[in-house]
Length: 191
View 1 (cartoon, rainbow, N blue to C red):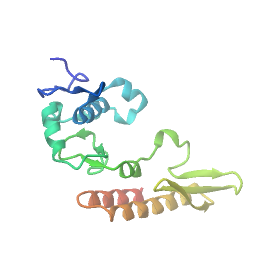
View 2 (cartoon, rainbow, N blue to C red):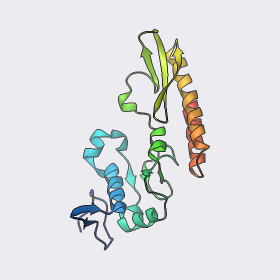
View 3 (cartoon, one colour):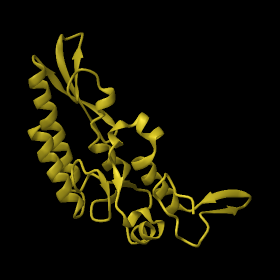
View 4 (spheres, rainbow, N blue to C red):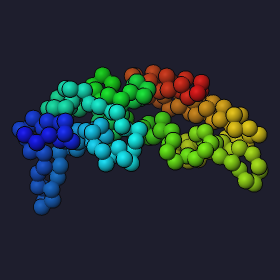
């Protein structure tokens, strides 16, 4: 039996691909399982997303049947598998550590460290006003928070605004996501 990304075992008897109206269609559970394995074990993926280096998959989920059984019990349609909302900085894909969340929620906590430059998250230099400006993305729209004399003041303003925004989103959710987002808001605010 060939391993998937050197670790995963497809132990499900059903085919992972079928042909529908002349087009090859891949089982949606299998797609999610393979994506998870690639995040943990694919060197090409790690080359472009180094934050995934060191991520692993629990022993149970290395078997496709176990992952599929868990996923079938989840509210997953139109959502993304997340490993670190319930437990910040979690590096293990496991049933008690993961959940499916909307893309909006998944992006909410992304710090975009690789592409933001020399300033803290949400802070940039405003060449017109000669101050540090703070912007926060809220539901897909960049909102101007303010201009500040120091990078420290700007960073604090960003953390306060971001924390408040995460709390607002959290209050619209059900448990356990609500509590998890409130924990993230606390971490954001206190830097």
